[in-house]
Image 1 (tube, helix red, strand yellow):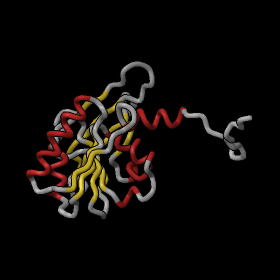
Image 2: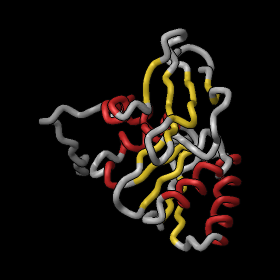
Image 3: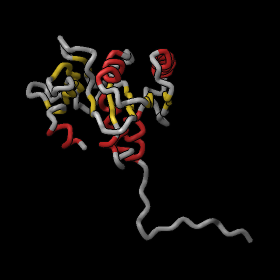
Image 4: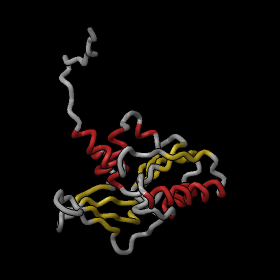
Length: 181
């Protein structure tokens, strides 16, 4: 999945600080937006949009079916795809790089085959308030199939991290119920 985005030139590492750079391209493949995230694992990572980015273009993948999944951050989008790999390329995905809906609305205008929207925003106050606001805007724009998918943790990346820390059973191990005398 990472290779897919790297080959599409929408995900790369910057030379100066080794940040991950997530590129939002237009319908012709021209870069229009870039979001950087630090790869440091200690402390609060740097994240931010590159100056001059057009907020109508988020880091995305446009698939062939009519479903679009919407995320606040590129890392959450990639985490969600990692957690739900089967057939992921058929669907469309977009990161808003925040909670403003500019990239979502522009994507829906640009790709009319998308009719169903799954809001996968953070499971916190800002994400829930944004989901309410965006749902209302989508319904006013004629989108009746809008759903919300909630992560178990604050966001999809935290869910992925939790899954990766979960102990794995040996293939031959079996959990047996306790016997009562």
